[in-house]
Amino acid sequence: MRDAELEFEAELESLMALLDRSDLESEVEGEVPIDPKARRRRDETVAGDQIAHGVTDENRLTDSVFYDRHPEWTGKKLKPTDMTFRREWVQTRDAIVRPMLKEAACTGWESDPQSFSKHAAEHYLRRIWQSSFTVQRISCTAPPPNWVCNVSVNTGDGSIALSVQLSAATRTVTVSGQSGGVCVFGYHCVASGQLLFADSSCPTL
Image (cartoon, rainbow, N blue to C red; front, side, top):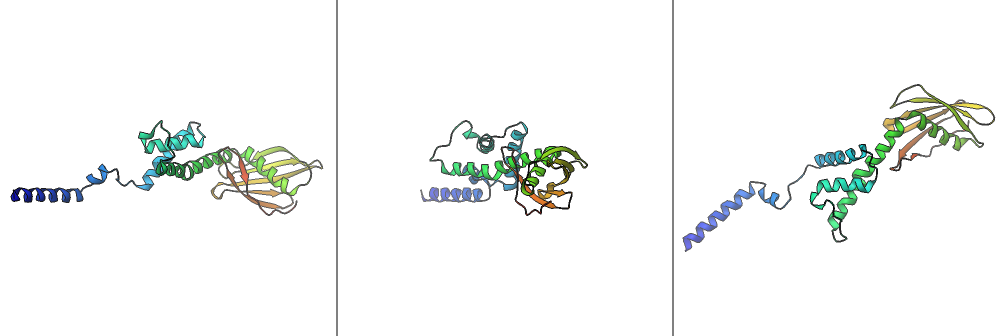
């Protein structure tokens, strides 16, 4: 009987040693480590495919990424008690989905020099022009991503010319008046598609 016990203990120790040298135990427990960079690339691919097909709802996009990570949750709703998964969902929305939606929204604006330069010129004039004005004509002399557009504006007292130049890499746009006044605005976009400009100290025309 003693010999059988010793033999069993030896087999158990051998098995434990084998598990220590393999990933079997962690695989069984679902703890196989995942490369964070690979995971993020996968998440961005999933969300990016949805955005490319016109999906802009952040909840739907976050669901798509979350279900890709956890197929067993597909079609189900998280309960208030599922705190770990709920935190992961929120983190996915904030760290993956929202930045991608903002990027996609700005890409649309940056590739449309006419619309972008009109909004930039109007923002510039609202800061430094006291009377009403109307943008009359826009002509662009350089292609995206770093385009330059000339904007003709009717101020009611005559016409003025503005130059609008985009620097997509730094997310800035420079608006120059014909009398030498220059403003450099930062800009960003929101998921709804709105283009917003950061404040800047601008001279008068």
